[in-house]
Image: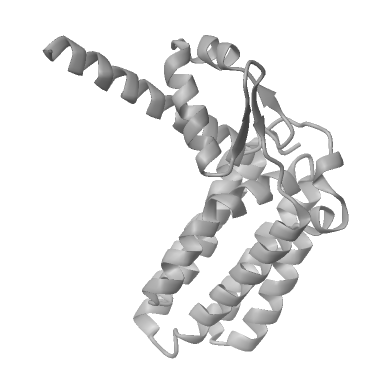
Length: 234
């Protein structure tokens, strides 16, 4: 009985490790939408049996990241234009609302500014090293910090549900677009400045232009027709 429980626990641990690996690969663009992956290939890559890989695939399908095809593998689901538009609108509204709640809280603003500048520096380092995964993670953290500082628990929780999809869209938009990555950094610096200045109206306008500019190509083109890509910035 003890050995059976230990074996089951090991399989679950392996399945979680496979899930974390696969989801990270989807979010940072290593596994772009439209990619078909097989249990065997992932099992060999991670040095695991097929059972935990299958469990990871099922979990990712439940979350909407993959679609399983018996005896063929799993297809990474692409970001569709209507989903992109909805997410951009929601995140802009939530962040703008958060900034309007800051009022004149000097201590909060000083602390937030420090945290935002830290994420901008991480983005700059990632940009220089061509690490798209690290860049998009810092991008997601930058916007998350703004929402969290607003202090509305319901909006913060809802924004958290968008975070993974935002990170994935950013990776897709910035792939091989060195010019956009540099612009994102500059615009994050401007957004931080507007928060410090206490100008929520200008922040809202700048944020809207920022998110739409970053994802302009995804808004104009049908992602389903795009080519597969890797995970570098350059």
